[in-house]
Image (cartoon, rainbow, N blue to C red; front, side, top):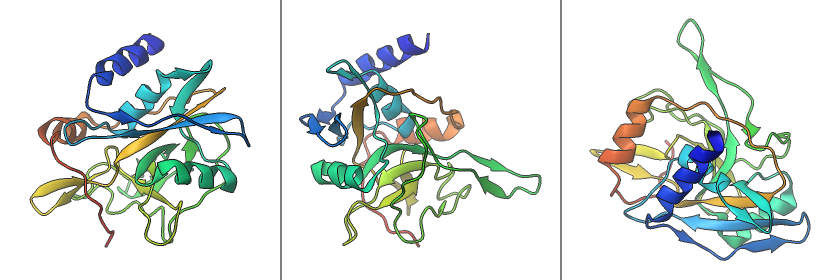
Length: 213
């Protein structure tokens, strides 16, 4: 049933206005990588991008959101266009009895050990988790934009959205697919309300870069 769901989602989203770049081969680890762009009329949240990637196959290898486990791999993926894109890392936040957020260890969708990291200074920050500005917690990994520190990571919320005055903006411009022999980890889905409001009401909104304050 899970595989059928993945395939169905991949097919349903394939007709949307997404642009996939040429597949690149990394001779160091033998994996393939592909950059996928969002458009002004078509976006995915992190979970949708995850399922979409897992419905892809190249050279007999299963797709998944890219997992970065070394500096070499980080450099390779960044250099083929990783800037501003979802990666295959996630955190699962919970609340204690006092309502304080507890952020557990970051994980890769493949189950690989999360030992290598290349965070932006001050990240992961879980910026304003649970507030009106960030109703969904920043539990998802992305490449941040090039601000003189290439290949650095940032934590963002499910669809990388945030309120910008009276409108909504996005920090991601797509995602990175990696093709390798891997095991895929299930990720709990967040609340449906934020999914609905950001995924449907603002589907035509264009992404913009933001700076954390």
